Length: 111
Image 1 (tube, rainbow, N blue to C red):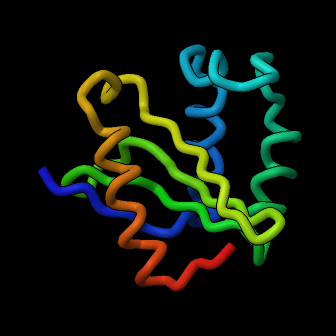
Image 2 (image 1 turned 90 degrees about the vertical axis):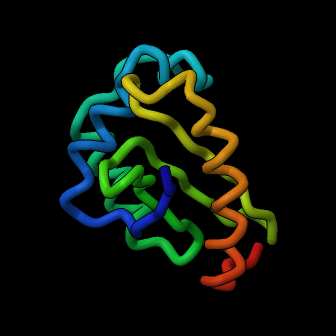
């Protein structure tokens, strides 16, 4: 099944909030506390309009299954991604990381 990416859009704010507060995702963060919606929305607005961040929704046959973000800091790209709960354990993480390299090349994302 092909994995594709699309740019995060304003209407993805709630979906990303839901995924970010998923218990399995929170365990991977330094701060594993629940995030308040206001804090998430402030962060989201900052990131979606940043020249130093690229955010994508990961699609499997058109269905959102996760997100991946590339933050540019000191000329380095820092990748962060998560997979929706129902899709974990199927090897999508490796596929996403491999495929994002093509996106970086196509969009000429530079650190």
